[in-house]
Length: 176
Image (tube, rainbow, N blue to C red; front, side, top):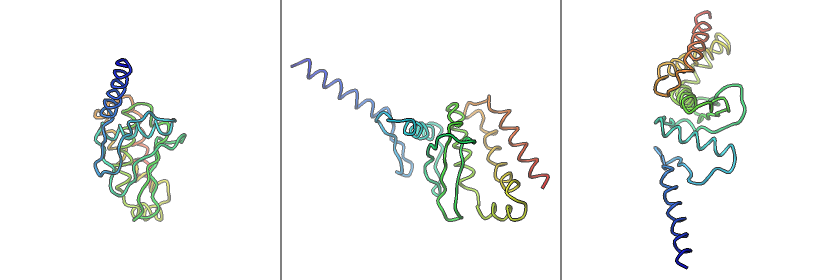
C-alpha cells in the first residue's frame, strides 16, 4: 500500500513539474503553452512556434492572429490579409523549422514587419508597378530586419542567403 501511495505521489509531482516547465506565456492572455504532449506533427509545430515566441520575446501585434503551422510550402511563412481592417494570419511552413534561430527569424520577419505594413501602400504600389515590384517593396524592410538581428537568433549560417534576398528585392525595387 505504501509503495502505491509513493508511486502515485511521484506521478503527481512529475506532472506538477512538467506543468511548471511549460511556461504559460500570455502577453495578451490570448494563448498559453500546453503542458500535454503533442498528439501529432501539427500540434508539435504549433507548440514550437509558441515556445519560440516566448524564448525570443517576439510579440504578436494586435492586428495579427497567433502564427500557425501549415505544412509544406514553398516559403518559410506567409502573412495574409484581406483588406486593411482585417486581422492578418501568419502561416508557417516546414522550411522555417530548420533551426530555432531560423524559426525565430521567420516569425519576427512576419510579425514585426509584414503584420504591421499598410495594405493600402501595397495595393497602391501594385496598381502602379505590378505585383513583383510591390512585393519587393514590402520585403526589403523584412529582410533588413532579419539581417540586422542575425546574432540575436544565432543563425549566422543564414546570413548570405538573407543578404542575397535583400539585394534581389532592392534591385527589383530600384529598377522599377
